[in-house]
Length: 197
Image (cartoon, rainbow, N blue to C red):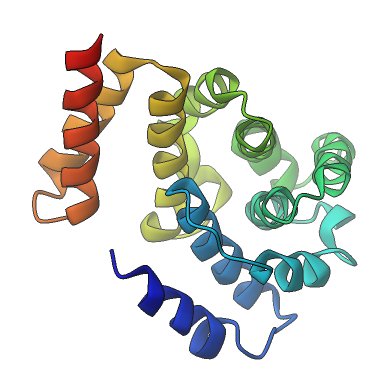
């Protein structure tokens, strides 16, 4: 919960050099997206990440990267750039390679869900992310990296007013991470939401 420390880390070790290396951009976008989900104002930090994604974002060569490019574009308020990534994925899905499968099975819906979240259409985010939770591993990344999808789903459930789903997801997270301050925060939010219903 120490947001100032997180931002200091972002500005130094994580993205202080404003690297154009894809792995660094993935990490930077994921960190900022996690803060975005919590409603944290990150200032203009999104811009440097989005600028570095811009020249390569529509290559549609790896669905996991596409998702992080869309996060960066949504965070930077560059909706048209996010839409261009999603459009490029349609061509990628027509290819005969592994990424076509990664994109069809998981990546395309993840990108559309992130865009919907940015548009404030939280019910669509839930509709797109919920069915792919159990197969998200198909598009790569570690468990920790893919956790951003669950965090997005949980936040979208809260914001869409889906109290039952928010409570179920919060309880699941608390059960698997009982020491996590974030899991406890979700549980408290779910309880408050249910009491208000």
